[in-house]
Image (cartoon, rainbow, N blue to C red; front, side, top):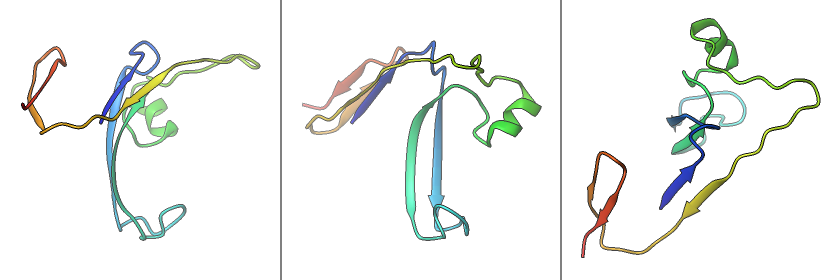
Length: 93
């Protein structure tokens, strides 16, 4: 699987895990998941933390909107041979 998105809209990627540890909504210690998702700010600890730590959050004026595209690609292959520093992926043959 591969993901691509507009870096201007989402300059960061969050990697997060939920490992049967959050007792409250929505997990209730019932899931074991991992995700990488596009993000407009860091750190991934909620809006209050972002505002207090570095102000990287985005704001919109009342009634304003923002649009962005996210592309998810699924493909079959023998695995990844290499990922170059520029993001170029070489699949195993």
